[in-house]
Structures are given as C-alpha cells and as structure tokens.
Image 1: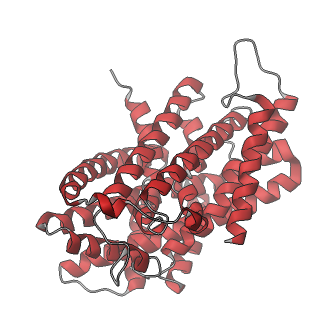
Image 2 (image 1 turned 60 degrees about the vertical axis):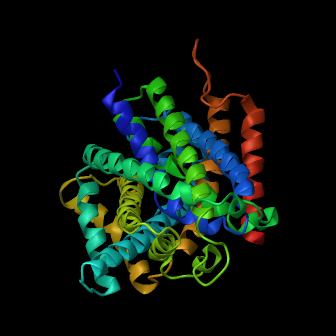
Length: 398
C-alpha cells in the first residue's frame, strides 16, 4: 500500500516544479526547437536533482529546522552565510514575483470571462492574500491543500494532452536553433528549482533518509516527463512565428493568458479554454505554495522568528509584501523574473550545495554502512561545481 506521506512529499516537489516553469517552457524554448529542448531538459533535471540531494546531505548534518542560512554558516562561515542570504532572498522573492504576476494574470483572465473587471493591482492583492493564509498554517496545511490541487492539476493535464495531441503536426516539432539555448537555459533551470523546500521536507519526514531520497527522485522525474510531453503538444500545435506565435509571447506582458488564447485559437475545441484556464490557475497556485513555504521557513530560521503568533505574522508580511510590491510596480514581469531566478538557482541550489557538501565531507566521516547521497566523491562535486560556473558564465554573457 502506498504511503500517504510519501505521496504528499512527492506532490509537494511536483507542485513546486510544475508551475510557472510548465507554462513558460513552450514559450521560452520555441526558438531552440523541441529536439534541442529535450536534451537541455534532461541535462538540467540531472544537475538540479543532484543539487537537491546535496542540499539534503548537508542539511542532515545539522539539527532539525535548519535552513540554507544555517547550512552555509556551519560549513562556509560568514562569507557563505552572506552569499546564502543574498541569493536565497533574491531567488525566492523573484520566484514569488513571477508566480504572483502569472497567477494574478490568470485570475484576472478568469474574472473577465464571467464579466467581472477589476484592476491588475486588486487581482494581485486578492491572489496573494488568499493563498498566503494557507502558508501561515504550516507545511501540513500546504501539503493537504497541495494534494487536492495536484490531483486536479494532473487530471486536467492528462485531459489537455489527450485533447491537443490529435492536432499536433510532426513538422512543427522540427527545426530550431541549438545556439539559442542561452536565452532559455535559466528558465529550464528554474523549472527544476524545487530544492528550496528540501529542508522543510526533511523536518516533515523526520530524517527518514530512504523516504526523502525517494521523494526527491520520484518528485523530480514526474515534472521532467510532464515537461517533455507538454513541450511536444504545445509546440506541435501553436505556430512559432506570427503575432500570436510562441516567439511573440516571449515579449508579452500577458504571457500566461496569451498562451491560453493562442491554444484556444489553434485547437478548435470548446473544452480547451475552460480546461486550460483551470490548469494554468492550479499551476500558479501550487508553485506559489511551495516557494512561499520555503521562503517562510527560511526567514523564520534566518531571523530566529517563530512561525506562529505575532512573530509568525511578521514573518508572513516579510514573505509576501516585497514580491507583491514588485508585481504592483511591474505587472508584466513573469518571464523575466523566471530568467533572473535561474541565476540564483544555479548559485544557491547547485554551486553552494556542491561546495558545502565538499566541506562537510572533509570534516564529517561516514558511519559504517552509510553512503553519500550523491556518489562519485570529490570528482562528482567538482563536476557539479564546474557545471554551475559554466551556467553562470552563459547567463551573464547571454
């Protein structure tokens, strides 16, 4: 019989991953082409999953409740602590800005369909306020809400793929320029940036290493499979060129609702608009919940604040007010925010974990029968560090 908690943990990772990344991928990889994007997706999945396992490895050496700040401080001292603070805050605030922007755009689009017109700032405010309450109630609350949303999302995802697939033209999946990958690589990285919730999962599973390893591996493989199928059906139906094409959506302030309209126009089915609107809504909510939980726990750990009472409310305000203000000032920041977040993902969830794990392995000897979560010793850590530096150079040069 399947473990309910195991399923909940896997769905938390799936929900955190399949959010903005799912909706942004067909748009951001349009110039690269389907075949090339397939290669880059598998590569990004492999390195980011290895990074997540390293985050878990380092976290397990510290007391329960420790987050990235405590991990960096204990392994790399004050310099590591400062880097972790800056990159983690920038990463999660940027991701939340992206999800509030995309979520409020979808929310606003749904309201328009029922004849309700509200200002952009109000839809962003309502979206944030509604789901921040779930985060305040803690990981168990997020888990239960996320489970319901995820089953709904995966069900609609299967229906959408089934409806769209007959309209896919194989010729649309050919072409593309591999050299254009520099503009999409950071969004691909962000699509697997689930490691921010690994410390929270460690607390939830009470240091059950075998269970945590399963959660990370299965939880990351599901988004990879879903991304590949999703890229195929969307890129096989919506044209790359044209005013309503995928390339045009890259520069649109309403990329999420624009993708809905383009798909509705390409597939002449009355079910598409409703299903896709429902799907995009849940994508934004589940990603929002996962990232918010990671930031909420991070701020509580870094500032030594409680997660309940007045201190919990202060932590909640620190979690949601900055990204909400960014969205109110720059409502169309969705895709740009995901790209910026990718740079922080590389630093915080790949480069720093490799360095912290290397430092931790020097000072802590394995007990009999234990093994490192990422095999290969120093060679694998060096390779991941080299990949991280290469990705940063590409991102800066792009």
